[in-house]
Length: 596
Image 1 (tube, rainbow, N blue to C red):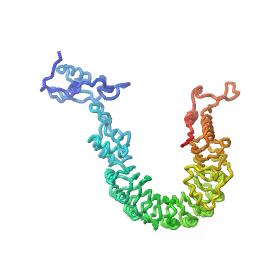
Image 2: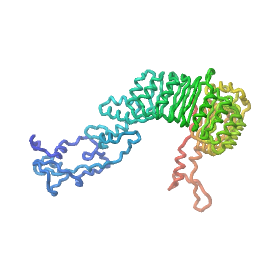
Image 3: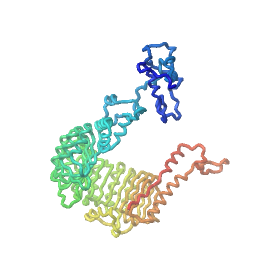
Image 4: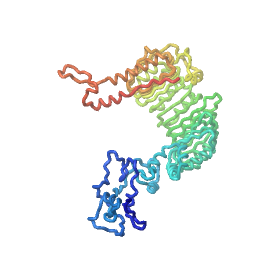
């Protein structure tokens, strides 16, 4: 017999209906609570009667006696065909889930809490449909790039609604604009993000003021704008159009733009702008700054000979109208000692970083003016200048307690003695760049050095040193040292315990027998365009340092108390915390990087 069949008009209890559906075979999750079966003890077993809820009965009675309470086991018996005799009045149900704090908060992406409340579901999977919970789907989609979000919106209606919420909650967007993309593509993406605060565009196509108008219309609360260009893209934005954009964006605090070769001139007036980066500048007729809160500025001019920009006028405008400047970087072949004197005459008491690049007319007298006007500098970059060891001596006398980064690349008048003196007299130094300082004019130039060949030829007082030199540096805080292109260096001795990055690219005349590195924390050594024997010596020395750390076992005194011997880790029953830290450090390997 197939058992008793219910009449269609006979009311069936909810528990019996749920149980009668049965459980899908082949499932590795618990049929009662939905958790994995392996190592699982279900809280809704036969002995669990803590929380119960009434169910409808055949006669429609809504209340029963407490003695009539039955567990889930009786419900299974009732489903087997005994409803007439043992119909369950009460069925055990899961414990109501209290409101818990989400493991991944949505506060960092600016989602409206009321909107999440309406869409919140139980954080367990739906066993019947297999749908991903909303919060899991949210976390997956918010990590996709813009192109992935556009594709995900076409999957289903639910995914489309979730992607809309992701777009609306976005505060930062990095977007690459392909060469074949139209301006409408950027507009359609930006309109999805009304709360955008930071925008970074990578342009692979030509663009003009239409792009600025699209950004201004779609992002009313924009605070940071970055526009980077590829080699094939051309920036056609003029100075008047960029000035109008800066004046209209009241919340704009940071503006970085590449390829500004068509500006011609500009007048920036903004009370909120604090960071300004412009590169590719060429032949500017006027530059007016009305930015009282500007703290960081970077102006990179083109290397063309026909550049007619008056750098002295530019520096004078900065010093007069931007009293809060802390970081200044100007790269131009037209930098001169007169421009340095104008800058030092300004009252820039908060200046901490000064970078004047490719100024072949900057001499030791310029260093003296800088040292007397800005005694609190933490970074000084005079790469491409004509300073000598005397200028380094003035730097060391004025900035021994503040300077932590010194960059003197492309300064051919500097010798190894000046570099050693700087390392000895600047105790807080953490970064030093002396690339292309100790050069050999008879050696062949590599591809990396060809770019700086023109600047060296323009230096009227450059004296290339034909005699090979040695360099000895002992410093307790130095972390990065760059000696790229020092073809006149034949001996190097380093004792820097904290050094983690060393650049020896194109050091062709450095002898392997005259190389000694005592840098236990070294992580990377760049040795492109070097001798094969030198590369093998570097690998041997850095591997020896790592091996010395690994074989440093803790010492233990013998039972008779005569002497101490090294105890390997496998025989050390209870390693201390220091031993565990030492083993973690021993896993590090220094990489010798050689690129073809």
